[in-house]
Image (tube, rainbow, N blue to C red):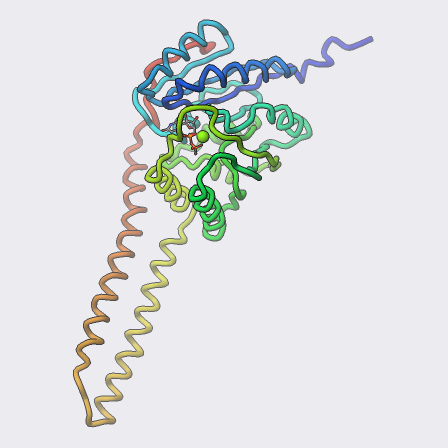
Length: 321
Ligand code: UDP
Ligand code: MG
């Protein structure tokens, strides 16, 4: 006789976290695909849309999606706080036994989620997507992304898997650790690596944006890369110290040379050019090092103010309401 509790452990809750910033063109298509996904699963589901201060009709659309389905939750920020913060807010609000992070533009195929769930059931606490191919991205973005993930692994304190985005499934235990990580500089994929546990890399090819355009212009991408480097590594400070040591060595050699020449030869010349170049070189190195130190100090300053990470304007559809 089948036991009534047989499928009890599988009827668990899956939370899907979707950050949205000016996504009015695509959000309804995405929602339809996510509903299809939920219908194909033997799990209960909730979809948490985080509206990151959109200035278009995104919030309106989300409100109406929420009215049509009680599994939809909407968290709306008071302004734009950035993608990584939006993802973090979704993680904070998620009640699921497993939480999936997915972009709202359908670049990450929802159809991969069942495979992630299968791996989760095999006992992996994190299943992250690795992009083997990326359609519709500029050669420049591909090259810079590739270079960045290699660089960060050389210098970072934790190994961050190559070519991953935030598309991933995480077990409740991982989510609870993330909820307790209060840092301001949120490089979510690095933070998940830091948490550890058993992690599985699932290869997929990243699609083109279904509609709308990228919300990551070059400036934001560079700042994001800087966050990744500085919040996971003290290497830039060590490089600064290295510059200092090399400069000190050169100064010592130079001094010895000057003294020998003064004592042992009679064609002693003032060496003006050398002096000039030397002063400028050292000035440049000093300023660069100050800049690096300043970057860390600035972050410490931001961190100690202990402001909330984001400000929520509206919450719809949450159980505690
Ligand atoms: N996003 C966000 N806040 C931002 C920028 C982006 O919530 O300030 C969301 C955006 O709606 C999308 C995801 O983050 O769901 C990834 O952004 P996008 O597709 O523009 O980045 P790309 O794929 O081009 O790197
Ligand atoms: Mg995208």
